[in-house]
Image (tube, rainbow, N blue to C red):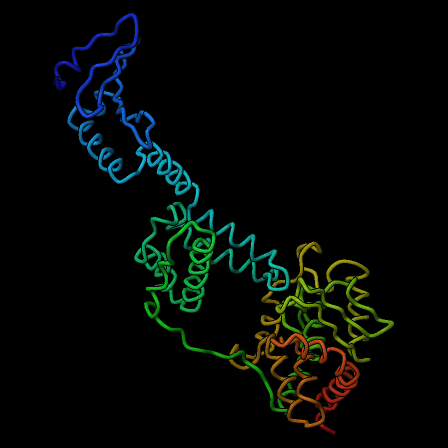
Length: 400
């Protein structure tokens, strides 16, 4: 005989647990403490099993019957409803643990220890900062529940402030996190794949760089007359001679410099291409570094922060120095010293283009070719470094 809601409601606790049967294997277990628990008895693969459906009155008789019917449909398909319930419970816990913020942190940690392809410290800081900006909106959400509209709304908060390149880069990074989740079997597909073209494309701008020899001479004379901080002035004077990336210059440490062999060895962890880079130093470069050594040596950063020697100078220091000299950002930048050297060295016609590329630490996708270049062009690079510094001296003197 089928149960009624009244019969379940009026059931009283006894000296022992007892059952009130409904139909189709559904029953309510009345405990000695007065609890009323819905259970479903079923058989699958010839074995008897029980499924907990919930507690009365939180689960009414009508709802309990609906859940019984769903379970019986699963059984008919060969699915064990008890195991399916446990699987969904595990999935729910994993989903709660796998928030976008948690996956972002996991992805960033992986990229920082990715061997030769790992992020440089400055890249890691930048990427973690950009991801933190979308985490304020979607960081708390399970990654499997995030829709394309959620990501777009988060990135649009950056776009509306006019930071188009940051918005574009943030969307790319978010996509990388989602693809990492797909690769680690925690997500079915990347929701950002449907957002291509959704953001306003930023105008492509190039680093300001002076490449006219006469204007290079004017710039060098202006740097020599710089009246700001001594560390900034020496950084500005050294930058044209070594033409490394601004981050590599400001993170230089005295332990990397070998004055006796006129060599600066930048470790792989500081390089964009994640490979050690050797910079031959001209006599002028060594002299400038020795002058710097008297101020900030013998250990630590070559160009320390004005606030603490535990950190390098700000990434804006050299650019700020150039602005103080009257050069606008579209005219000359810290990165522009690389373009200056690349242009004028190539125009001179004296040097193998591969030697110039190696001096600029540009990567080579062919590992055999790259290894050959490191050895074959070293002597030429040493000669080129001295020629370049001598050439800068001539331009500083007005080309006489």
